[in-house]
Image: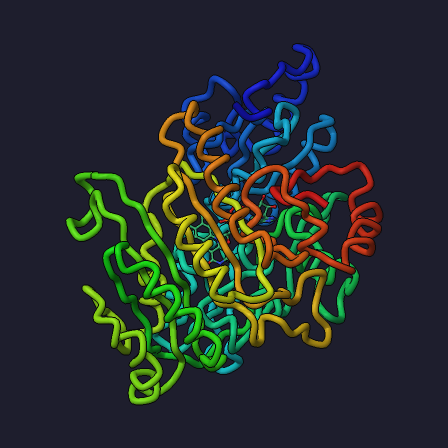
Length: 464
Ligand SMILES: Cc1cc2nc3c(=O)[nH]c(=O)nc-3n(C[C@H](O)[C@H](O)[C@H](O)COP(=O)(O)OP(=O)(O)OC[C@H]3O[C@@H](n4cnc5c(N)ncnc54)[C@H](O)[C@@H]3O)c2cc1C
């Protein structure tokens, strides 16, 4: 049970006045407890988390967002921006009883400027929306592994893509952010406009306001060599050692992931996955076919059962990691590692067999992801060479404690190689040390939070 499940009622009279205020501001674009559609609107992508907000606002424009923020402030309520709820696990210990959940689902849209190679993306847009708009121009973006994650929620918390080792974190591609602040005003923040706020939002994200649009740089990549190699998990040790060694010399144009995946027998899974444990290497190599094939040769020599690596249209890259296409009840934990020596590989393989571990994953980071560009924001780089990430399924609420223990054990197995850094986007459960994700930026970020949101109006999955 999360703290959100312990919702207590707002005193009746105050609640009535607040509800009236919100209704007056937003009409049917706000749902209150008892309204038809309220339960569906409060349910996040991570359906293991039960959210109980005071109301759910569904703004359709920046003006609607201004109205919500002003009405919530007048009513003494807090505001929690949420686009999809992929990170709802990280919000699970925030009491939302006196909070308006601002669901950005209805605020989607992308305008691409092919000459400037930029996109203006509305606040609730998904990566699929950007790829669909940018692909026809031969452009792509620093998106993550799943197409249904939101652009704002991912990008403003760092954003680790399959291009990260060559192009760095997605957050560094942000040019401007249009945000409704705690004062209830719509502000454009960029390098030259409200530069402190621009710095803080790039990492501070929803703790500083409701973002109604961002402008991002796109990449001139029309096609990419990408895919996955799959073996039975009985090959896990061979494959994991080979991959770890391979990453030691892989160029920055290659960003790949190694996973041990334990699938339950489910009819909706393809037969090659249902009821099986497998080991998978996947990712992208931004090289010519010949160079990418030469690079993959030592891994292909291990004779994978399935090999889908090939040149694909860049928008199809969101398909290679096999992220769940539907809302999924899950819990995760992660750490960053300074190195992955042979003993660490053995520990990783053993951890893949911990009961309750659904996915035991290592992402190869380093390269450009380690470098903080000039003019970067509160988050601009990620220390470490690898990221270990463990996922557990939570099919029923009672499964949460065991799944949480399993994912923490999966990560703890790599403790001797852990460094003091975290990837903010991978903080997906209460209890992680957010300061470790910000490093030396943490103090300034907290000072700016006090300056821009002194009453702590905004509730974020990764609070500042
Ligand atoms: C299946 C899956 C695959 C993933 N793959 C990757 C990956 O490859 N790389 C990676 O780096 N991360 C990845 N993630 C993590 C994901 O990027 C983060 O959880 C991200 O924060 C989710 O953003 P969201 O808006 O979709 O989720 P939400 O839960 O809706 O939002 C998370 C937080 O972002 C802020 N936010 C969202 N929208 C707005 C807005 N419009 N205005 C202000 N604040 C806002 C809020 O503070 C909110 O609490 C993955 C997660 C999942 C579940």
